[in-house]
Length: 266
Image 1 (spheres, rainbow, N blue to C red):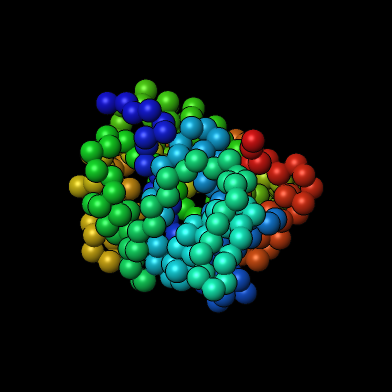
Image 2 (cartoon, rainbow, N blue to C red):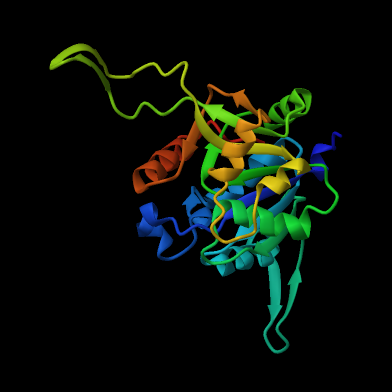
């Protein structure tokens, strides 16, 4: 059964500790680390919205209050307003932003793993939706998410993962014994793919998940789904970047500052 994109819930994993970006995540959760003047989470959601998805379920954990505060105060952060100090009444004069998103903030546990976060949030907020999306709160891409969703529906499998070539951060050496046979500064990984973190699933995926704290999405759930022949790959050779380290963040910032960030839409 298909579903209009505007009604497909997008579950965003926002609860991790972000230990490899500790310079930033000691102060805030990784999805709230800014790229330009917006949290990376906003950029991710804006990409989905550009392609017609407007319902979001944010799976919160570590420092989730910061994300709750951001969306509770979204109107005042993005609009002019007046505060009557004696009564603390707030009047927002106009809504000076274009976002028509529906955002559900779901506390899924401080130390809960990715699969359990999806399971816990879906138990409350998937309701009767036949399709849903899942992504992480730290990855950006220029993929056409509407086309990936259509591909997912056409494949008629339970799940679809965005496949991207592995980043060629380091040069590759091909050797024979102790002799270097080929030196490639920018190796070609044309036939290799990694998990790009943008998923679509039918609700039939739910039994593969567990609400137990230790359920990791990328282990038993996706391994077993693959074993059963029910996972498709949507291959994307365009831009993809993950904010895993401070170096990654600096690269994303540089792209945004250039005015030519590949993921920027609308």
